[in-house]
Structures are given as C-alpha cells and as structure tokens.
Image (cartoon, rainbow, N blue to C red):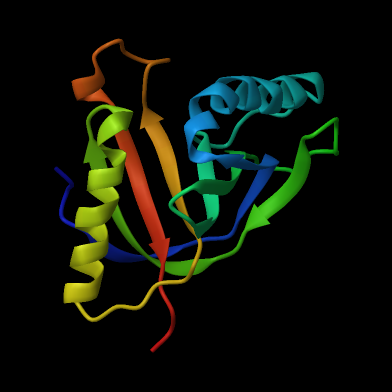
Length: 155
C-alpha cells in the first residue's frame, strides 16, 4: 500500500494557507473551496506555487480535523481573506508515498505509523500529506500519489 518509508531532512517551506477546524464528516465539503481560495489568492498576487498543495494536520483527533490547507511558495504571500502567510519548519521526517484513492489514506497512515513505531522512532503531533498526483491530473484514482510526512522527535 505504501512505498518503503525513509527518514529524510525536510527543509523549511514557505506556504500560503487557510487554517480550518472541522468535524471529520465535513472534510470533503471544505477541501475543494479552500484550495481554490488559496490558489486564487496566489494568482491575484502573481505568486506561482513552489510545489504540490498539501494539508498540514496540527493534531490527530478521530472526530475533528485541525489542519491547514497549504500551497508552498517561493516568496511570502500577503494575507488576503482567510489566506495567511506561513511556514512549515525544517524537520527530520519519516516519509513515504501512498498510491491510490484518497479513501485509502487512513489505512496508509496506519501502516506508516506501525512502521515508524517498529523502527524505534517517536513522532510529533503534526504531520502533512502532499498531493503529488490527484484528480486534477488524472481521473484514475489508482494513479494518484500522496506523499506522507511525519516529523520525528529528536532522540
């Protein structure tokens, strides 16, 4: 289900983001409009994305998503509506790639978490998933790729 995980250094990443805290059941209704809003703010400021969009989850709760819809940028974005300038700090992360439809992400994170624990690593509360290939690229969910990143606590 996931590629072989690796431990890598993730550099600091400037972002334009919208913070959201929503019940789990509402995630599908807020994601599309949120990412459109971030891309719209970047276009209005003539700032090109510096990579694939992502969601930065601040804490894991089974009933609530507390997260940021982010787009990496090469220069700071000015605040506009709900869009804010931000940064995901440099970190040592466990990283893997999940290939398949978004409905399988929960199981992929579970498999990834098991690998992290079995290999003696401890994680921070936050994590992010980067949508490298998705429905905007191909209608075949089997070809979608989501990069999973979980920052590690220094030993």
